[in-house]
Length: 95
Image (cartoon, rainbow, N blue to C red; front, side, top):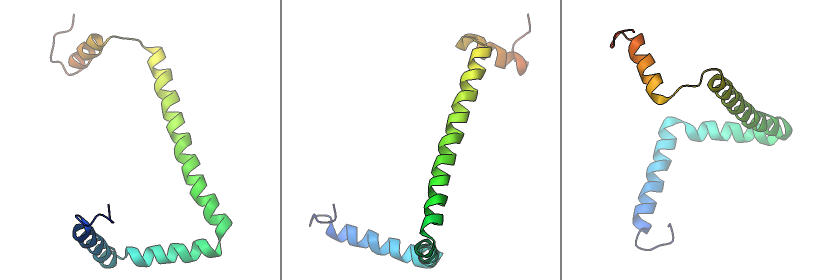
């Protein structure tokens, strides 16, 4: 908590370290450029941000559907899956 006097010095040191890191890596410059562009193109910026969020959500749903469909095609127990993997690596003899 930044207002707690017990941790105030630690908080201020961490904030200063973060500022120095941002200055040295150029994050301040990049954030400034993004902010300037976002202020000038509000609708495009919102469309871009929400497009990324919706795209990630869609990729997540697609992955879940693929996983679900793959599990329906071949049902097996954990022991069968381990045996199959070991057979593929030729660790245990084929029957």
